[in-house]
Length: 285
Image (cartoon, rainbow, N blue to C red; front, side, top):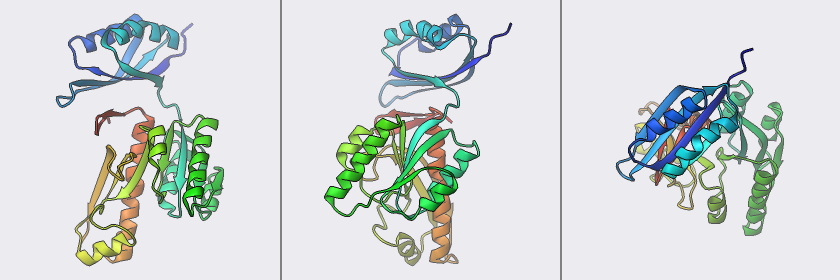
């Protein structure tokens, strides 16, 4: 009888040394696996080696890990093994803008985005109906001062622990994350912002952009760090505009780019395609 196949995704980072690909390939063969996708990158800047493999095998996880163990030890690898396509447990934080949340939940429901959202948490109540449309639980806690901000962030920590959250997405959550929470969620906290920063700060950035006659509108998705909007970039998109566009049209274009960019970044992260190399990311598309 033919056993069902397991499909694994293996990612690892280590010092760039000779023989890594040969050793990893040998471990795959030893475990009875077949490589269905392979990508690698050597960073000349940091001397690190990055690799992502998808491996199909009739062997169980224990057999695969046992075959990999000597290679992992020899090259001192930071590595991760997961099931291809497993939905990533994801907490989404929002404020009042609906476009990014709607895109994430729509694509999750349609099977286009491998995430599982057990809760949407907000500092406002205005998006409760939208979350309810997708049958996703929604909580709102107002953030009006230092004490309420601390309470909100404690609730984030509680949800992360209760639901074993693997990724937190700021889907236009318009509050600055404390350095303590940034550190606690380092490498699994993703934000989206428009491309005008740092040029047009504060309220009505699209009105400011219209007044200055901007020719490009875009968005940046990045990991969150204590340096505001300066974390490692995961994805960026841009679209050309001209003088005929009204401020309202610029807003609509910008929201489309924000939704598209954030969803792409979340998809890549959920598929284990995003690895960090210092202040930048390696993306295996």
